Each structure stands twice: as structure tokens, then as C-alpha cells.
Length: 195
Image 1: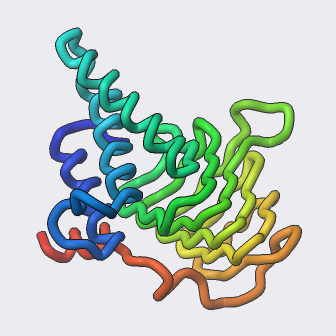
Image 2: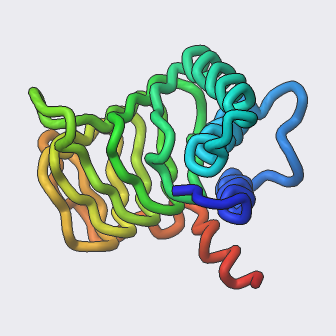
């Protein structure tokens, strides 16, 4: 969660590296990256700028974030993703409020990360360096360890505590020892090495 201006800049840089981009988003194009930058700005204002003078800016950025989310098909609440997020492209992504997803997540379209049926607070906790393929459904009070790759169209309704594996199927089960290595950019590790 972003708790300072320094962390805000760190999150922006980690997201940029995860996208493998240079500089800032182009005026035309880079719409998903622009959404992610708005997400980080909303998180920054929500968590750090509590004064009455900041309220109009927060509401302005929140409205832009909400409208761009509708345009892209994203329903992603603030303070869910760690640094190094890479949303691969536009398409439906629905995430329940309260879900926690670690650093360096790469997520594809048609993903749903939700609560256990009938509950509001039983949501998934997903580790660092997790690859989430297209069409994945993850729900319930479960945990997914670091370095896991979740295969396309998997339905994950139980915890996976073994790091560095691949899971897939309906319902999901371990299918490989490979994990997410090589499937995503570990932006936070790159930043740690450069300092």
C-alpha cells in the first residue's frame, strides 16, 4: 500500500518496468498503462493526502480512474496490487475489495478474483511474482504462494502454499514444477539491484 510520496514514485517506476516501457505513456495509446498510473495516483491521494485542500484533486482523479476503468472493462479497487503490476491488455478484470495481491503480478483479461459466495470479507491473498493467465477465476478465503503461474481458464478455490509451481484446471491442481519464472518482469528486484 502506498503510504508516502516516495512509495508512490517507487510504485510508478516498478509498474513502468513491469510494462517494459520507457519514459511516460504516449498521448495516443498506452491506455492500460495510463489506467495503472491513475490507480496509483488514487491510492496516493486516498492514503496520504487527507487534507481538505486535497479532496477536489482526489475526487477528480477518482472520477477519471472510474471512467477509464469502465472503458477498459476493469473493476479494480485501490490498494489491492503491490508494486510491479502489469495488466497485459484491456478486457474484463473484476477484483473484490479487500483482496491482496503481491508485487510483480502479471494479469490477463477475463480474470475474476472474488469473495466466497455469501461473504464480503473472505477474499484471496496472492503472493509475489504471480502470473495469472486469461480467464482465471480465483475466489474464497485462500492463499496462493509466491512464484506461482496460474494457467488459462483455471478455477482456483483452494490454497496453494508450495511456491514456484504451475496450477491449472477446473478445479485447479498442481500441473508443473515450473512456476512463473520467465513469464513476468520482477520489477521490484530490478529496482533493488539498481540502488
